[in-house]
Length: 334
Image 1 (cartoon, rainbow, N blue to C red):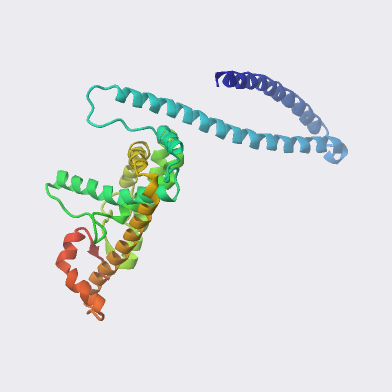
Image 2 (cartoon, one colour; image 1 turned 120 degrees about the horizontal axis):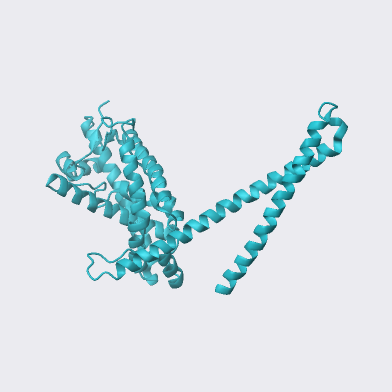
């Protein structure tokens, strides 16, 4: 391995010297030809056809070289950034692992997670369907837990933050986790600035369209930033976009590796079957929740129940119970 590195280093130094020499030759040749072009401009460029053709050939060659070097620059910069990030995170993990007293175990590096997934040939390796479902499912649950704890700490009481009628789940957090993972996964071994900018962009888009579709479909809103500066339709604002940026870093560097470590503990023997069972449950839960909330909206509008299913909803989920389940949901008056 080290022999290969030394060989690559030797090749790079050799090619680097040749490129520097080529750059000087090209500059000298082009400058001479441009002087000749300037000298013959008054007599007409058509009089020096060979010179014009030679310059056009050089333009094509230089454009091609510029594209090639731009791709190489991007590739080299990306690889260098990833190497530096992996070394930094490995040192950070080692430092925290050696602490005598620690409240939590150190966060595994994304590189270590990738290696273990490939080594175990795990059913949920990479960033494909099975992994993404578990990220979504854990996000639906974890988001509710975190927000209820935050409510307890800041307000002194517990308040429901669920978004579905069965279980402590909220699709907003699940889709947020899913989108963050899909968008930021490729930056998991890169510097934090990529996760921050990506988190700002994808988080703001998610928040805006979740608010928009909730209002369009159910005629309700769960948050309004109209009183905050730099807001867009009250659905998103600069402050919370910055929060999304920090969440992006926290997600891909801290939350996702721990989540992936838990997913690795699900045995291959029944992991796929369990995934499909939970997927069916979440689909059913979402459909039922949508029907119940829509019927609640109809009751607010004064629409009476016409079917046995609607009457069952009215009996099983009256307004008082719905207000308790969806504590922050408000219907928009039209």
